[in-house]
Length: 318
Image 1 (tube, rainbow, N blue to C red):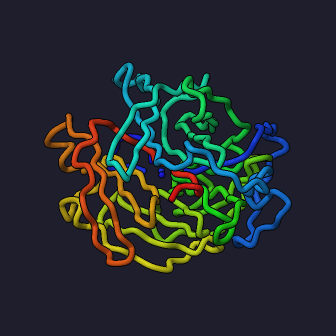
Image 2: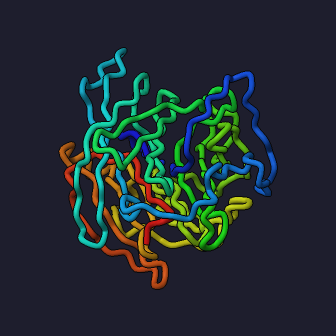
């Protein structure tokens, strides 16, 4: 699931009823090697005992970025966020409308929970929650503060705690380095009630995350070549399987933006080539589909017409 349009492109997921806001002084970060507990610190939903799914849960949702005022140094510009619904079965895109989270700026990455809510992280450090069942797309900010733990979120996704479990866990990733407390790509869980962070471990490569109802966690790494899709162990971040995704772009090109989502046993790669964007700034994101059974990647939509920085899908989705 992604973020802004640089040659480094990047990408989150969702759950819970009610927002708990913690002050910075009450936040804590745990280093538990991914073992977790059932007391909330594991990143589970407080309301996860309810297994129901909503009609709105069956789609992939895409996070669109556009400039209201383009950046001109020293000004960083003003951007807006919109949500786009993607129906993989029909290969159809529908713009749902603008998301306005007061005080938040720069849509970056996203995840979707079982209650049809989009959790959107902004480059300003705000984490908002949007009700997808309301056409007005109301947004409320959570109490998450990336400065407390030195963990700006660059990718996120919900995945089931175990196969077919109605309990979801919100996984988040940071690429590490400058502006973070970590020397490299790192995986963690975020408690959606307390906003406490539990660090799981290092990732071999940073990338956007997606989960599914089987309790699996996947990573699409595409900022720089080589481009790969990984299935990782959600308990420690180690790589379980690797799929080559080089075929979607020139061998030496990186991404100017990308996102990632599971649906129907397939994995959807939302991607824009940095090389192609350099040649034509009007180019937008394409969508490809990976079949993990064969490793084959097929193009789904060559040009979406949108600059997409994030993707999210509920574990209720097919």
